[in-house]
Length: 173
Ligand code: IMP
Ligand code: MG
Figure 1: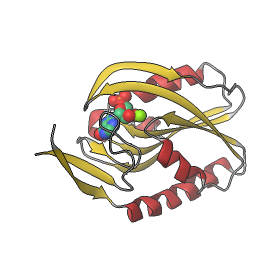
Figure 2: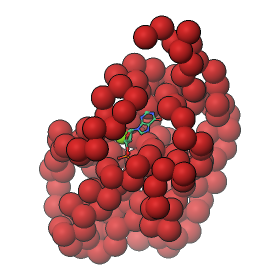
Figure 3: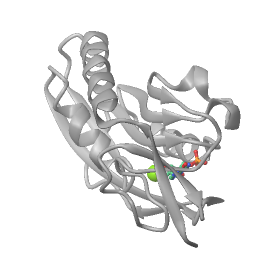
């Protein structure tokens, strides 16, 4: 597919919003230690910036999941890399790149919930509220966007465009 892209959210807007989110999250945890679980691969850039905006004792863990092929979700969530750390008794903050159908985050909250964390909260860089009914269950949302396929700032199309410092919308030529 030949594609071009246009900026949807600039690097500056992203940085400003993450700084606000950092303050909000810092306030909610009131100095308690937090285990941030970065959902690979898409959330790696967001999580890297987010943890540096937190004023809390933080540990970072990674979990790998895969459900997309091209611009379509397969609807089947697969763990590609499980946690190497026991989260029982920890305050867990799941950090996602985007919540689209909500299937991935629903699967992950169940998977991690049964491991006995002290608390489990969800933070996502982006949400497509028209595509899921999870909004009440998401604790921290960076930006709500319309139902369109976006790339950049960690998000990919078949592995490409993750390195863009801004969020972009792809357009077919
Ligand atoms: P869900 O399970 O449908 O909520 O999809 C979640 C996962 O699909 C995200 O973690 C992303 O990796 C991927 N995804 C959903 N929408 C987009 C998009 O617009 N661009 C890139 N990846 C997306
Ligand atoms: Mg993802």
